[in-house]
Image (spheres, helix red, strand yellow):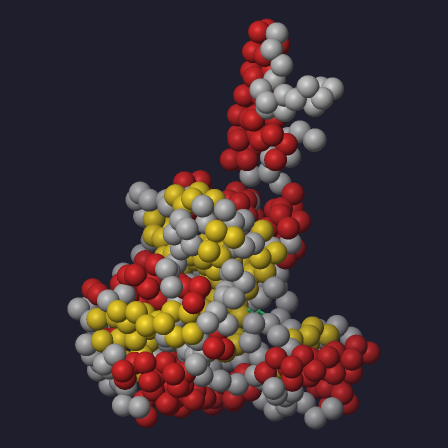
Length: 505
Ligand code: ADP
């Protein structure tokens, strides 16, 4: 493997460029019109323009990407996450074109591609799944009968589901017929497949996932867990490794279960088995993500292994470096920095990044795809970067994340930075007392509370405002910038105070 085409953009493309460079492999970036100046494009050894902004006309044009790879003499394709990473046809087309696919075989993607197929496979492998069916529901009558058998609440789920689409929680028998019809409709629209099955709804679980790595020589190991319960609308916001809810014995059990499912699928390369972990320590397989995941860095830090390098090494035929699962060392936390405005219902924020000051210092890692001058639009995912910290203990990691978030300055667009500061300051979060419902329930409280840093900032602005007024009163001058329009006094400080919500206009 001498040259890899990276069929992706943003932070993950840059992450793959770095792994390639450390292994002495050349990298080829691809880019759409708005990404022409993007950091991943400049970082790669070569770059090829592939089309306009819409992903369907650029990053999702699999056949074109394969053509480009052949034209530039690449011998492998890395898909990153999202886009084409879990499309069975693309994995197959890459291999058929005589290129190395840096990911699992197409057959493994297919085996884990539908939730019902994955459940069937997991059951065969002896991996525990949530009680439920493995077949699409025929009608509401069948759904009612099964729901009564499993006991309410139940969850209706699209077999082809992803991103929480086509999912409905049902609390009583009278709600089933409507819920089924709307889940089927949503599934049909989103995935072109209206198959919906039924699962028991697990009350108050954590989302805990196991990283696996399998080589092409039949070896497969688990690399511990990631705690991903901090979710909003089924989107992860904060991830950690390890999980406060997992001890070495449970880690071993979950690791074995994940490895069994991966082996049953004929898995090769990096993958992740997602589980729900209930309050009693029982865990249930949800699905397998057949790609590198956004949150992979927390595992890298506590396991001391470079997962993206190992994706490349496995794809070129190397054997795993060890066959026993290591225990995690220290604690890692990741915050997803998105261009969403928490104060405004997490609405996407767009614009030019005018200023970017990155955190640094001990134990801080920034996996980003932006720089000052980058334009944030609506064509792609709002995740701009990941801020990751590593420390000996969870407490120290939280302190470090607070410090790093305080150092981070992003001007020009609204981001999730403030939100993360508030989560880090939250007593329940600090106690590790969370479930997958926690964030949604706690959000009003988190958003209304002033983070300690904000309180300090407010005090500084208030003090400056008073000093300014005092100085002007004593000198007898009108406030700076005042217009003689009947006392509409304005100064830079009072403008700032107004923007910060400390003074009304
Ligand atoms: P998707 O592929 O659409 O993201 P998942 O099966 O991964 O669907 O489920 C998304 C989220 O929904 C999970 O992370 C979890 O928060 C919740 N969830 C899924 N299945 C259950 C269940 N049986 N009981 C309770 N919550 C569930």
